[in-house]
Every structure is written in structure tokens, then in C-alpha cells.
Image 1: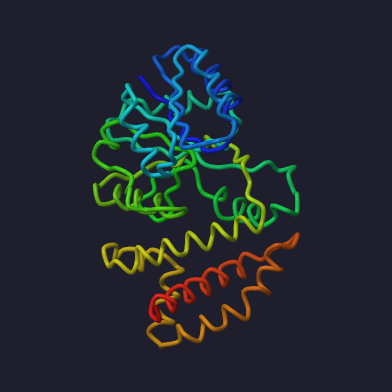
Image 2: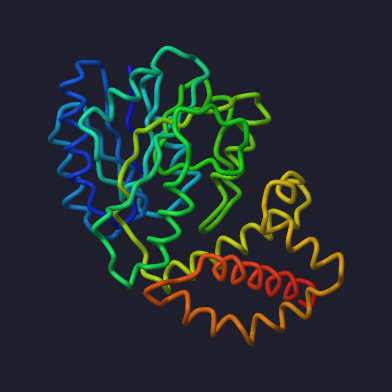
Length: 301
């Protein structure tokens, strides 16, 4: 009936799998849980123990193949018609998490996003930027709606049918961090498939500290520029506020100036963004400056 698919990298997924397995057993529908260890060198012994649970499969890859390829590979290994895909650094909050998805096991072209939550009592200043961004930008979305857009698709916790994943694959040309979910959302849009948001969030536990999150942000911005530069994804400029702002700067021939400002201002912005009360407006400005710096480097290389 359904497959739970979890790509993991250097993260202990034993509690997550055991919680899911307990719910799956009580739900009394055919299921499997597949964990794909994507080139990890940590928690391998712990994670392999899930094979002792009936219906669980553990697959270890010696080399990391990346987020898109890992999800496509898992989808290809799945035996059942409905796939629940999640990131490894998640925690089950609802006792009926699987049941809430099972309510949609009737549509051959279904895509459902369950959502993301953050622990309300976690306020460690080391993770202040990740927490604020997550709570304000990721968790603050309407539930029980059909979403006709695609630029805010998230792959942290979602369900789809086998028919959909066979028609729409994750783009494997993306390396590193960021925007594989953007392209997947657009591919759904192009295929005429919209998706629902429901109240079925998992808690995001694997938080990045502020400097790590900023480093990943820069990698994501670089990926966005690479996609934009190919000219193969014209929709990005329309759907991305960041690219729209960059295009206005480029039209006015101010990219070099903003790239210069990035050298001067971004170190100062980093201090504020790593504080106990980071500003998301300054975070947006930081990303725009990084994008201009990346574009200018490509122009002068």
C-alpha cells in the first residue's frame, strides 16, 4: 500500500524509524520503510539496526550521491503505490501521522505536503537564524489548501503517488545544497499536477548553527545563479523574489557596485545574523549581495 522513504547522511534515524514503524503496525496497511544511507561515515552501526524491524530495509551507499539522486533511487526501490518521503532529521509529532497521509491513498495523481514545525521551547542563540527563518518562512504556511504555485514546494515531509514520481523525477543535475525542490515543484506544475498542504508536520530537529546556515545559504544562492545562467529555467526569474531584485540591479548595470558592497557589508551583516535576534530583512539583503558577488565573479572570470 505505501512506502516510507528516508535518505540519510550522518544522522541517527533509529528513533524516527521506530516511531514510524509503531504507527505503521497499528495502521494495519501493507507498508515498508526504506532507509538509504547516502555515503555516511557516522551512525552506520546504529542505523543498520532498523533491519531487525519487520518491513524495514536498510541500504548503504559507499559514496554520497546527493539529495536528488537519493530520492529518485529510493522511489525506484519502493514496492508500493504511495510514497511518503522525509528528511532524516525529523521527529514525529502526531500519533496519527501516517493515518493523515493514508486519507489520501485513493488518488493516482496525488501530492501532499505535511509541513515543518520547530520546537517552541528551543531558543539556543547558536541556532537563532535557522530557527527564526524556519518559524517565519517555512512553518507559517496555510494548511488544507490546494497550492497552484510551485516555487514554495518543500521536500522535508511529503507524500505522492507512484504515478507522479514516474512522471516527474528530481533533477539530478543539481549538485550541493539548494533548489532541487524548486525544480521539482516546477516540474509538477508543468505536468499539470497541483498539491495539497495539510496539517501533518514533522519537527525539524537537525538544526544548523548560524555560520553553517549562512554557508548553506551561499551555496543555495550559487546554485540558483547557475540555474538562472543556463537559460533553461526562465520561470525562476518570475517566481524568485531574489532573482527579480537581481534582474533590476543588472538592468541598471549596478551588479559590480553591489558586488563591491558585498565585500564591505556582508561581514557586518554576518555579525547581526549570528546574533540572538537576527533580522530576516537583513538576511534577504545578505542573499542579494551574495548573488551579485557570484554574478560579478562569473562575468570577470
